[in-house]
Picture 1 (tube, chains in turn purple, blue):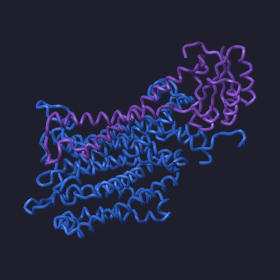
Picture 2 (tube, rainbow over the protein chains, first blue to last red):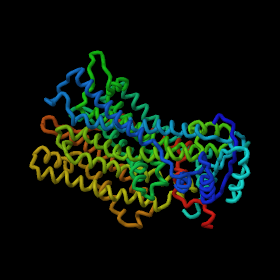
Picture 3 (tube, chains in turn brown, blue):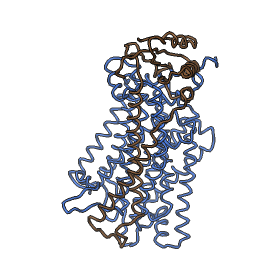
Picture 4 (cartoon, one colour):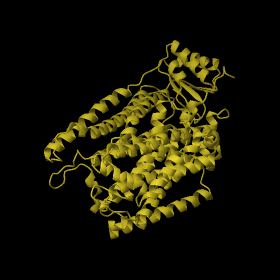
Length: 176
Length: 439
């Protein structure tokens, strides 16, 4: 993101136009495309080649961390001060169930949240975005407009622009 | 939802965030007045002791534990709607889930106050958390009360996280539609969200996982709350059906509270009427219908098992509930939870808003009474007739109970004016997207 942006961005009223542009750009070899949408749309995911998120791995790691943490906490605290209760075993596996379950859930939720934040930042940093005021202050992406950002060398700007116009982009802005 | 567009959803939500009118301020004053009385009553109890709570031998758990279980139950519907109904793709969920989730967060915040109020010396409530005290003595992990500490705190933590996570795209929407200081204030919690494919990809995957993880959590929390009672040997408490019975009851009361909140919300913001449709309210009424059958079945099976088991203490208690000195609470509970929802079998009633509102209020009352019956009558009439007792309400606990409603509604009132009370992005997702070829 720190590098100076060179490329084209545009806005669209219709989702099918947006998807068509994304598909055509990908076929031409542009892989670092960013799209904007007011809500999640699977049509855009398909056009972008169905990228997969790695968030579930973090959830799984969080789950095992929480379970392990719960067992360690309960074993340590139970053995640190022996507290016999109604003749039950000092280390009672069934009675560990609820606390182990709750900590498993708690930790996996926090790992999921952290993974979301980290992966979004990582993906955003891996892509270039327009630096102009017009892009930064454009406020209809969360309202009713779709958008596409394509970084490209100065010599290819016109070619990319023509694809945007072919599918009737509302606005096409070049930044070089 | 044929007249609804992406832009009109934004407009409806923004209208709800306009500066409040006289009716909002007036109702907030009433709510704050009730909360103020509750705070005063709690202060009075701290100054003069738990004798003002109505708790005495043999009834050591009274109105406060009833309130705790009631509010945890209310807190169930939000996560049920946002997580369980998300996984099963229930169509009536989208319009009501944001406000229901807010309801969950505020209800669990309210529930969390009651163990602190109940222990009397509120400043020692941190003893519930595992930490080594001066004798290096740890908490007892075999106690269901400790399981409950973990369950309720996890539930509150996850509910808040789920609620805030769902809000991020919608706060970004409000930010983009605002100017000046308002834009700046909304831009902070929006965390730079601009609806890029990278953001939606990880956000939606994380949200799905949240829903999948929160689903067993919904069922675990009230099961564990029920074990506070069922793990003991008291007649009326020591019952294996308590976990599913409590979960069904929690969903029942939570859905009723959703209706109690959604109906005035629709009335207050006319733009919401096209979004929170009668069909959505009918969907909640069907959930109530489903759970009232389970609750009614649980009531009757408890009596049958008390009779069929031949356990004399159990039989004595289940005779005491409908015919003892606290029988009025029992019969009012049966009326509110089993009889009053019967008209919902008819579509005409399920789609009649005043009728739905009235039934939802009755269910709220009935479910409070259910918890009161479980908690108090069982302790009033256990094994030894010498130790039997009865319950006398004190003004302090009644005002604290009313004050808890003031606390809950205060947060909800602030929420509808500060946060988007409709899930903007999910409502848009449910619409047909704008397509040129479809024109």
